Length: 419
Ligand SMILES: O=c1[nH]cnc2c1ncn2[C@@H]1O[C@H](CO)[C@@H](O)[C@H]1O
Ligand SMILES: [Zn+2]
Image 1 (cartoon, helix red, strand yellow):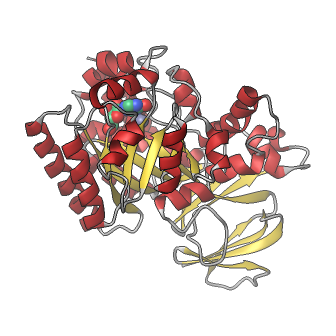
Image 2 (tube, rainbow, N blue to C red; image 1 turned 90 degrees about the vertical axis):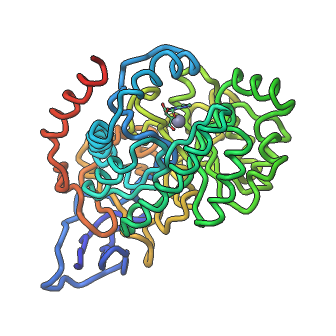
């Protein structure tokens, strides 16, 4: 299968892009050939598909149900109660709804932590998206639960591996240090090494949880986990990292941990603002996540790009902090590095995960500075999406999914959850 995107604005100039199978084969001037599917790029710009490094995709169904609450109240009194009603079918439709939203806003890969992974994987497979899926482990310091969670996690790793789908890979998802015991976290480290897969965990989201950990274990979360070797020999994506001591930042740097910055979720839950300028100073790999729709309330990564670019200017009173290109890299190159996928850039030999945007939109005119427009002005409404070399959306129409059916089913599933 060959796709030729003709005369598109990419990497600063008008060129053609040839896709063979799931790889960007060539960029430059390329002659049309009969067997090629041609996409006219004349009115379009091509960008790498965006990478969302922290979400809980089926939570699309919780959009708007528990707004304006702090994290612990939000989780304990609302979200966890509704989550008790979940099943594979609900999760499947919730995931499809999330896939529609992500595709339409230019995200091609996401890093997820949730439950009922059969339902999530089935939806991701059908959507054509790329995803790293982790089962969210929570033992609440109970031995019996711990054993169950470890079994579940390993079962799901094997389940995902056995799907043999190059777009869907497993990860380990211990929820957080305040919900997972040391014994569970040590087992997670072992499993990550055994299967050579990353660990995806919530870290230092709120002051409350840090206080809890300090009272219980006498140390800040990163120090506590580091002491028993949790970060050793494994790839870790730490979501949030809102409140960090200097010593904790040192550990993040030393252990090569990737940070998933979720500015909108952190603002909405009033958790705080992550010290991104400090992390960048240390050369820490900073990526972007939306978190789930219960706390965001959408999956539009363009909003996170803009928010991350302006937020830290406001807190530091320095307009040179997080420049447009840097914020865009959070959602592309840096995300790819965190998830170890050869994507996030439009380069020969890279995965063909790319997005086309028609420039006939008011927010993109005049075409004076496209890089700036994409960060500070664009609303995320993209036109064509190619993932793993397959056309998933063409001129705004998702080819892989039945949108109408998904909207109807989302209402049905929400009725079950809210009954
Ligand atoms: O921002 C958050 N902080 C902590 N937990 C969260 C957040 N967003 C979602 N979940 C919860 O994480 C579990 C998935 O493993 C789910 O229970 C989900 O509701
Ligand atoms: Zn989360």
